[in-house]
Image (cartoon, rainbow, N blue to C red; front, side, top):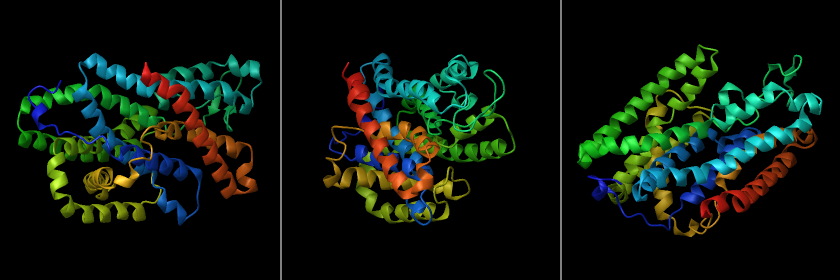
Length: 358
């Protein structure tokens, strides 16, 4: 499908560590949300982990489009990987968390707020209606009306951005193909990188000065253009990066380490550090993915990262609501993480894996 630039695409070794990296990033996000105290919280920087996901996505999703027979096959593969578990976690929360609602069961299941949650989240518009009626402290104001909305699954907003990039990839590749040469393609990706940085800074300012959920949703989406462009750049220039990686790995590690130290467990970076982080994190990911062979067996046949990512937030809220955090916080976190992994295990073997085999 990559007419005119297919010769620029490398042959990628299937024995890589991307599944391991995604597992690490998924646990970093989950543990970052779990509430570890400083200084342990520094190790679990959710912002860096999410950025890493988008770099890997830019690399692998572009490659997925390249090896697909046609655009229909590409979208079918993406839907099978993303949608079954995503829809399941939304419907599971909608039904199961009724047990934690302050509303009676009959009123809960007839509440318009419940169905607004289902429709908004299945449509990837999580910011439109992120909460369930009376769940986790939401205030019910009469039948179906909620004054205070508490977000059920704070991690699903990134899936919206992922879907956006899935849709955008065919257009991106069509545009890059028109440039014909690697040099021109790299200039275009560099401009996208710089545009992504300044665009995200602009929307960050707009979102901070607005109470509009829509503007906040757009602001979140703007942060990751540079990271996705970095992933595409790493794919197009894979051989060059591999040849020169020794020159870049030290500054890359330093910049990523500074991000961890300066913005521990940040929800978003911001500032000048964000200009350099995509490139730095990109080189670190490439080196780990293709130069540490002993990690290849981790997650090679079972990818639990997606399940960990989409199930951890509501499960942590359940453990808090049940009072386990007030009894023994560290024990509650470890038990919660075990439950999260168990859900991810079942999600992979009973939902995700079966959908991929169809």
